[in-house]
Length: 113
Image (cartoon, one colour):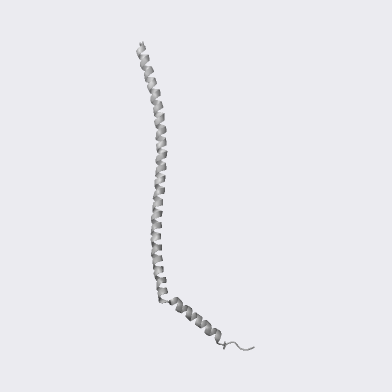
């Protein structure tokens, strides 16, 4: 079997070899780019999960603040009612009078030694 080898075949083989090397180089670059994209995609997924957790935490905080404001308003109203009813003043007066009466009366339970 005798195959004729001419210059056209050599040129064609050389061109194919050069394209093959070029394509291999391009594939290497694309594979590196795909690897980088996968890493970035993983990072984005992690960031998304963190943001979701933060937003859920903020919603909980907002709910807590609303509850605190409601409780504070209720407490403010109760204190206002106490001030208006003068409950504290009357109670202090009663305690003061009781103390004065206790000091001014001799103790009947104490026996002389």
